[in-house]
Amino acid sequence: MITDLRVLVGLGLTLLLVMLRIEASRFGAAEYDEPIGGRRPSLLRRLGWYIVGVGGVLALLFVNPYSESSLHLQVGEPSGILIALLLGGLGVGQAIAIAWYHYRRLRFPDVAAYPGALVNEILTAFIDEAVFRGAVLGYFLWAGAPANLAIVGQAVVYVLATRLGAPGRDRYMLLVAAAIGLLGGWATLATSGIGASFVGHAVTRVAVFVTTGHAGQPPARGAEIEDVERRRRTPEGWSVVDRSGVRDR
Image 1 (cartoon, one colour):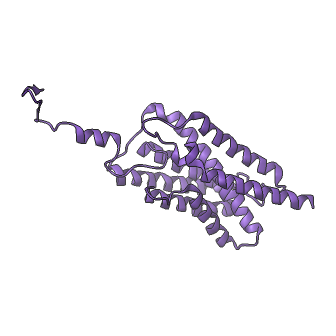
Image 2 (image 1 turned 60 degrees about the horizontal axis):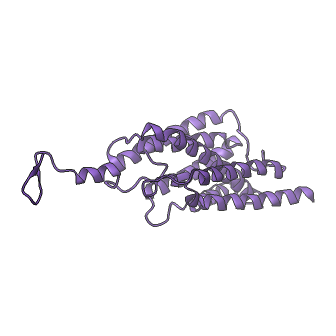
Image 3 (image 1 turned 180 degrees about the vertical axis):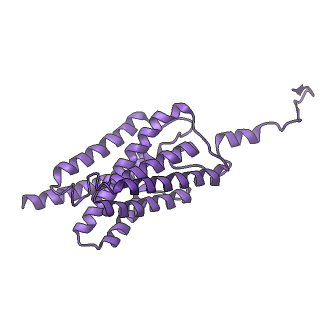
């Protein structure tokens, strides 16, 4: 009886963590760790999201007596190393594709942006994998869903929770999120743990940041600050004449 109650408490905690992921945009975390009006989101808000997310995963480990096996909250089998390398390679490849699609080049971010961005990408990948490829996938299986249906189900929940399908959001990143969900779910069941899927997810997120300078929401082509400034700049060979007739050289 007590064991069943702990499983149900774990389910409730999982649903709360899914809701936390839905609210990532309010905290300026995950894909929404982007400057707004030239200013970055509040550091305290972002820290709050990370702390609640990681704390919720740790609480799952304590509450659900089968969290390591049934919820896959463990590293997994040694064979996961090869799968992690494969997923990481695919992640780097698609990050380069995103940069080429948007900019026709690799758009490396400022050095000062790396520490905070790397923390965001790695912690987001950990929370996502533990919650969706771990707990949500595990509870789908606990409810009796076939393995393939459970993989698709948790991927759909994950994509909806990221809110990348909302108007104005990048459709390429929506497809990337779907691929992360499906491949991560397969890797989790194949290795009996979230280790491989976490490594692949983290490498993908870091690669997207390094190649585009964004956490996961690159703006439309030509909308970057440097692109706007380039269009405003006086073309080479032209001179500006003010109303007095004096040229600005």
